[in-house]
Length: 262
Image (cartoon, rainbow, N blue to C red):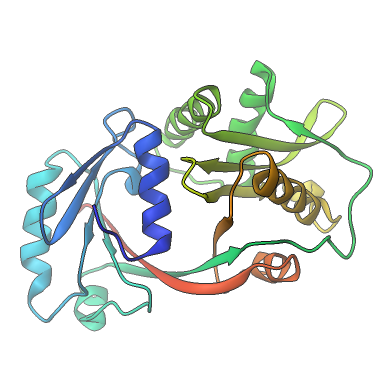
């Protein structure tokens, strides 16, 4: 399956390793995650071209056929330049258009202000993984029915990735309390993808995230044998500056389109 976008290529790598189903349907790829049907970016269509005028109705029908029970619509575009096509038509139809920056590094720089007060280690205990659920809910709170269950399923899938030998989840700890976490996953092809870099609101601005990313990057380039590290970041959020300071460079733009089902 040929995918141009490094962002989506590594997204699909992660999903495949987690047990998701990928079906090449010609002009698009159908991505299904039966174990977590409310995971929008585990159940979506990845189109190989931007939207032309009039494409939306046809692509909506394709999505509804693939996911008749879905309470959302999610489209990806396999491109590297952030072009969506038919932007106005999509916004008028209620779609949110999100552009993320795909970043890469073949080597990393040490953080300018490393944190030395936290303890850094892999998540390897039942309580660590339970705390990861709580950390995610604290970092990304949402008042949506089923949101906690969705996160529990997602964390369970992440733990299986580690147990199956596809990477590690790293944590920063104050004693036994999880302060920050991230995942780094590879399929052994020379590329390793970061996942879910997050720091508890009470522990931010202390150099913890930059120290954790640097330590995980060093592990990825040595123990995991990765040649390229991939990070996907919000171009409007301050964390992208942290990644740039560590040596990550902007490489592509990734486009995601979402809308709750009516």
